Image (cartoon, rainbow, N blue to C red):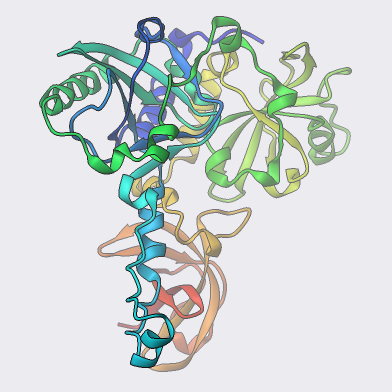
Length: 430
């Protein structure tokens, strides 16, 4: 297992991580009061890990302590919005009758108080999140520590070094907003004792070099079925015991792998024909906290279907292997890139995940209907990209002849909310 060498990481691989992390980014804050030695512990370039859920607020005015943590993130959970939806969905209480007032001693019922998360504009990062200190800036007696919320997978390791093109614009924005708000009044609701307790004290523990290098493959391993297609595609995985699956899938008489190397290193792709698969790069074996590669699969094209690996223990890795196999994974990305690049954006939409095929994430279960036909047909459609205002999809199964379309035809696809849930519908014949 080689150490991560950023000079060997494909530029597109890093850029994809940046594209997942930066767009839609907002600045939330967490004000507190720290001792001088606690503030001095923060330095630009540090990687921090939080052991507990991290609370902050999207309501930003003047700082209420000597320290402000500015959290730059596009993947915090908006607990305030969730609380507001629940609160506003509650039915309004009917006005009390005279009899109710008399029975209750004449007291009018009070209005239910808004939940704290709603009042505070509460945002949260889950336990185990990683952040990078991209700036420590003192202004008018208050120190702002700017924390960039790193990807929620192993790609956080890519940001251990300086990436000025990404970080400098974010630092400038964070400083500008901080200085602009320095004299603004504090927000009264954020002085609630409960919120103050949630946001008291320092944030995170610095990740040292040993922790940066450690893989902890066994500790981080999960069953493949616990990972969604977004967790697999475009990622490198250590698969325990996977060489048995490789040999079972190989043509009869073909000898693959190396004795004593039962595991495999593989890269996740979405193939237009095979769907979500793992492309095997090498057999491997665990060694200490890391692993050793046999480098014995060069020139071999072996795909393991995702659904065949559901019980396999898998660990995502971001280390020197990304650089070692940079040419291969770049070729895989080029070969499997969709004709319509907007398909990448459609894969990010999770609202119709319940309609997706488990092996083929671009396939959706839909109804094919026509204004001239009473009964629609259920079918599988492959999403190809965008076609005008609608999603463009290819019909993969046969449907009733009177609908006027056949397997292989491209049709417009729309999504509709119904009382029974989300429905995908392709209306044809218009």
